[in-house]
Image: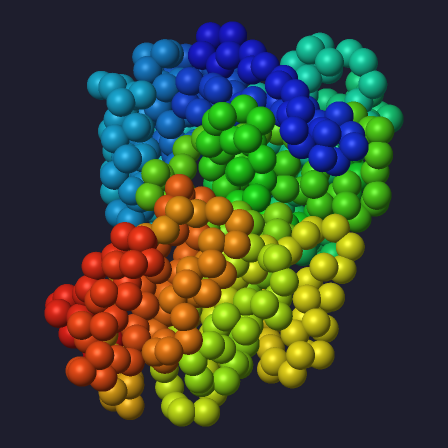
Length: 493
């Protein structure tokens, strides 16, 4: 190859063991631009006539395709104009300029991809440039299809299914066309984000449709309408479609990290998320399954969000809203009621003298009906409970907003604690804290760190302030009083 590399197929031993199947990863995240997009972009530009090359090329892209065009332009000595929305993260703009060097001109236009694309088409008409489409072009599709050619050459043995991410469909169309021509017995499964499933919508309607809204978590697959040429190919060659949630993609990112120590972007982990869901739905065992890890261009600041959602995506964490009595000892009694489950999150703020609403995260098992059993267990013990595990607003916003001022919480003193994190550590902390003083505020989140961190409000009469200080020192936990902290005084006191 001139610019692309033959990417390896890596085993996923941990996931294979867990699923009872042989799981393989085609590592397109290892390309020079950390994505497969380089293949199609270069193939399209390679097919241009000498006259077309002299005039130059243009594309509109906010991500991986732009980097592919830039590197191809630098390699071939072709002038390239790349139109990107003004909202494109600077890291991606800089990457395009770095890959393209003097051959590339970056134009920032509009606030979204559609506006940038319309501007690029206007420049095509005005300047006679050749447009390099991100996916809906036979030469681009053929370039992406070289992924399938490599897979069959590298893995000539048994292969039951290949899982391919779908945005506009360029990669999936190229892979499916090649696989079905050479090894038609291998299933090709398309995987889309649940909130950007334009191919599934087209299949259901029997024609291409435009989605009214597209989720952008998997930005590399956030396309409102599948390509015309890609749809023509895919509807003849793809065996089925799987759609996955944001949480399931986050869990797949963690799976890839656990097995390869690499970090996929959300669209890069899309195929593996679909593979896991397909295995679960069809109860597969003993099969050889391959997922295409299509890219690793994620912003570092997204990792916090991804990590936050991973356990729910694995169905190993449940998020519940529970009502408990507003009296000393209620937290500890609730912890006893849930048994030996690990508490991952505990948020609460005093509201009135009767009931306390707590926002709690609990570890559950993905096997069987563990979550359902937990809900039944709590209801049997007379705890009003609402399952928030699939509530997007709760997971995105409310978990960070539980709190506020509580004028009724008289004599409130605020403490910040640290204690060694281990199973049952929070229960031990609550037991040690005792039941003498009422807890008026509580915030805890287990991030897998060595130490658990808790913010606690206690209602302590002035005459008992010295006593609580002595008591806390005897607990042997690291603590600090935060009652005078500006953040508390401005937002919580």
